[in-house]
Image 1 (spheres, one colour):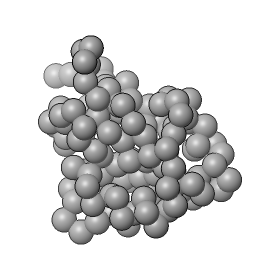
Image 2 (cartoon, rainbow, N blue to C red; image 1 turned 180 degrees about the vertical axis):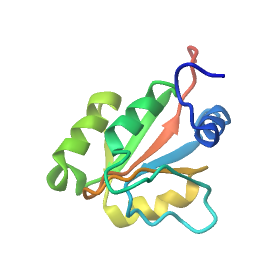
Image 3 (cartoon, rainbow, N blue to C red; image 1 turned 135 degrees about the vertical axis):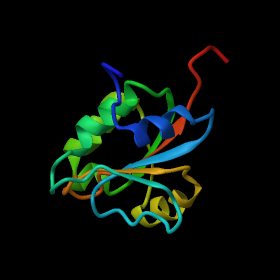
Image 4 (cartoon, helix red, strand yellow; image 1 turned 45 degrees about the vertical axis):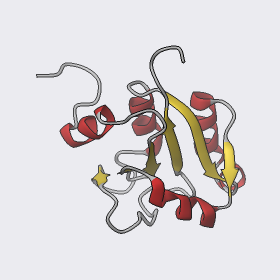
Length: 131
């Protein structure tokens, strides 16, 4: 039995299968995940679990080389913006509609119970060794 890290078996499996340049989403409760995209739905009730601790737990286990967020995030939800930026540095942005369009390229989505606007990020997996 695992004693640390991601304990959710489905989420741990999806993360373990990531390869370099694979994309995946960590999203709020309302993000429209594209049909057919696998979803690891962590929602219990609104706010549980919140976006920030889920993103932090994932980032502790996965090398991320790129993060893409909606342009609207910084103004509408500075707390979520800062959580993502603090973890991944400079963020690339596109408008929310474009982020939703780009979501179809993701391997899977992790749905949190976050109930604040635009708390969504499209992450690109990196590698754990020098390239």
